[in-house]
Image (cartoon, rainbow over all chains, first blue to last red; front, side):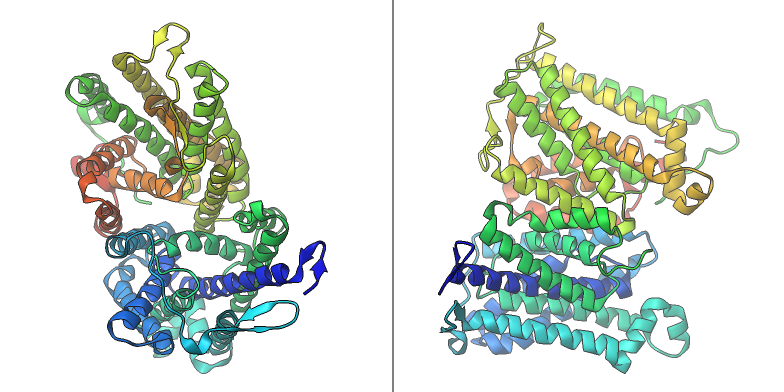
Length: 295
Length: 321
């Protein structure tokens, strides 16, 4: 271990690692928001609550059906994704023709419902989620100690992020999706079932949030409030990156996580606010966002 | 945005003067109310009503959804409480300082937020409000989790003793009515007509030569200032300034009040804030379920009831409210 600018390498890289982990959550969530916004034209305020639902599902699976972390990593997103599909069919589909702001208000209301129910049954304090044995322990890299689980989180979210990017930008299904984002009527005329695609897109975006929630469960506790503050930061991330580009959302998410981690080392008082400050600066310098196209 | 029905060609004087009559009814009701209802509740409700009217000025008449209005309400309340308690300012000066702070914050946040349109506007205002919430949490003078307690009410203009409940009530009523009439005046001025034009079709307003960004900014600052006036007054009324007032659920609550009462109606936010506050008091025993109920109201309002209480009423009676 050595020192950089009077700060021990362990502390610096430790915070950098935490930054990367937060960054992977930002990336996964803003990716989901961008995919949903592209198809539904709705900013999904429920995203934070659905992230929380992912963690809750993992907790319930572990404690009531004995299914551990790895099965939960698949099952929880699928379950929450199904909830998302139901939400889209029951509520969201009626408001696509209305002003954007109603989508925000509706999903905000849904978020309040989910969070309120969560608080009633989980309590505000939060529940611990035990780490799987396979991911315990860590490696001493010389300049820092790398816990296995954190390395796994970063690895897994990179895989999922780039998998999503590949699916949307490089496959036939993704091409349909992008085409439907541009001109749904025309794509429908070609015989693609666009409404079903919209429903499934919402389910997929929600599943991404739930996936992030499962990965967050062992790091933070499973608590009903875990999503609501995160979602506001993710909104700032989305404003900074712009929602036009999938790769942009991923890069902005990871980048801002790292910046936040570094701020914790050098200027801890500002670590909560640094992303909002960056947002203000980006708005002054590049109002359309780093990766956004000018409307 | 849905609009209230246009007046028909031939209308009865009762219909033509519906706003005046409604205003008269409201004033009379609010003068009688303190003899029937707990005055402290009424004063709080009036502060929230002014807050919701200020918010409605943006969403109802310019079509801008600010999801961070707690920023101006809460920070004005902190500054007012601090200047009244620590600096020993008289209540009118403390309220003025709080309101001015909200105006400055509104100018800064507004000039950032209007750089993006639509849904981004809502996200930016929310993010900026959250930033200022963290600042309030960290700064020494706000008292962190404890807030600023024991704010003195003092003597208004040196001779009105605000410890007297009726005096305090009449002062709050005066502030509320002043703010309400001011908003009414803005909406019905040429400036207000331009705001409505921006709401209906911003590109067309631009093509007619209006610098819409300036209009939006002025409307934003006015709204923030009035929200600040409401927050400052509330600090004097309840004698506490706390984190609740700057946090995001407060921003959500004012949206809910306005939505329930009727977006873009003049009296809607007033009705909405009384409805929501009454609900919160009556259902306080249900604890966290109140959050769920608020969520359900949001969902029901957006799906089935977009005009809100007064919007539906106005539509039914074919009058303007």
